[in-house]
Image 1 (tube, each protein chain N blue to C red):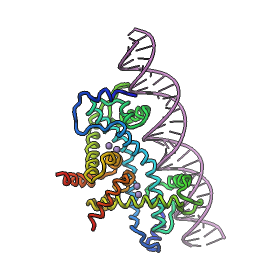
Image 2: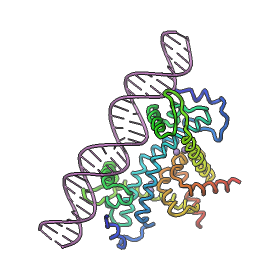
Image 3: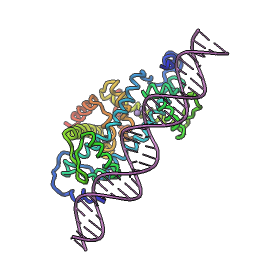
Length: 158
Length: 158
DNA sequence: GATAATAGTTAGCCAAGGCTAAATTGTTTG
DNA sequence: CAAACAATTTAGCCTTGGCTAACTATTATC
Ligand SMILES: [Mn+2]
Ligand SMILES: [Mn+2]
Ligand SMILES: [Mn+2]
Ligand SMILES: [Mn+2]
């Protein structure tokens, strides 16, 4: 459908900078981003719950709300979702626990987050900026890029 | 509210890896990500419209739908939003134009996108992977990090 | 142990960003 | 130039992820 682009392909409008990627590749870029956005928040919740348990011994909804700067109602709703997804277990009015699957996700996310954070610091980015950037970037870094970041960081720190 | 964290601060649960950041800083991380997500899609649309105009002479809704792998209805709805935001002008059933403000946003976004893309390639990431990662990462890179990426890329290519 | 403070839940609202199906407009072609 | 085709819009639906306000449960304090 839409031969518009095809028809235009060999026409005027000269090389202004880089060319547009082929449609299929371009589409894949946006699709990948949309997919990342579906899982992003879930990963952040699970990772944070894992961190709270590791550092504090337990994860309470109020702590999550404070750290995420979000209302308790929002957290409560999200907990239900995490429950349905089989990532956490919880009894009403009690603190949270990760399932096996939840723990696995927490560790994977934490590891990836750390690679990105340490990479940014190794690049020379200020610590507090690096923390902010890493929180968003982590969800858009492919395994390939992640491996390269890790190698880079190790190199610069031996 | 919630002295829970305070009370726990000096207690058990030893240094398992990196410590949790202070609550205020941690909150800022997530807030910044939420804010980026509000503007992200808008930036991608405006950038793409700018690119289509530059490379094809005009931007049509069908091309946007194809490149973004999204339905035309979705594009149509978003165009209305961009219109209300003063970023594009459009007459019904005709192709799109960027306002002054829209052009400025397109150029800023394109420049930033290119810095991230070229940085990833300079790092050694494969081109198609770099394109995918850059599409997501670009919205989470601070000015500080961007400047460092640019310096790095120039260094590696002289 | 009653009351106050804190924590968690529920209900109901909203905007954003997807979708499909149906209606409309514009363009190409026999 | 009429019919077919392509492009665009509209209506109506859904999920996600925010919010506030009101309610309920737990915990701390006197
Ligand atoms: Mn993280
Ligand atoms: Mn994150
Ligand atoms: Mn972009
Ligand atoms: Mn993008």
